[in-house]
Length: 227
Image 1 (cartoon, rainbow, N blue to C red):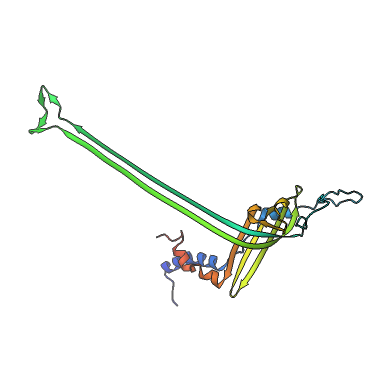
Image 2: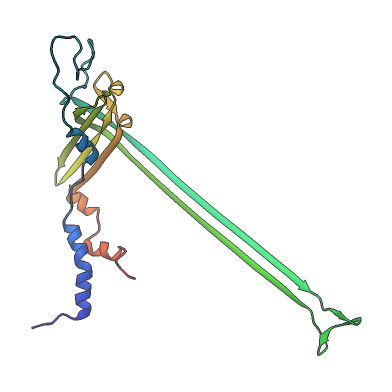
């Protein structure tokens, strides 16, 4: 029966957590704050016998746009962000001091016929530079559902879209708050107008796995690798 050396056992214990984390991939988490708000108790039931009713929109004439729970709304994704940062620091310092031999009783002080004179000099310099840039862009459309209407009329929306192409699946998920005033006549609103927006775009399948390094490569490039 073959025995495993301590060095091999240590390597297995170090690699095993990375391997397990690569095999188990949890789906993106939805916005917990919006879910909690959507689960709030509904407003009181309206009473008949009046033109205005509590919980109603209060609009006698309105466009056919999303405004009630369960209505459909299309979000136009127009996300484009760029960020850059650059820093540079340069310092330099030079010192030079000459000390002449002192005079003692009118005679230049010396030691073994060498004048007691000296000079001091120093030169310090530092130069550092750094830069960072990031950009992302997302365009398209996703249709969401109004899950709650807040007392001030703001609509809470949430929705997702799964797209399966060949051997891969793409997920687009969006949640946030929309003002009815920002909804266009065609029942669409730009993603730039969505407050507390949480936009998730991810993929699964062969193509997504091909763009990721293997579990052993992730281990050697992780902070757990001591070298």
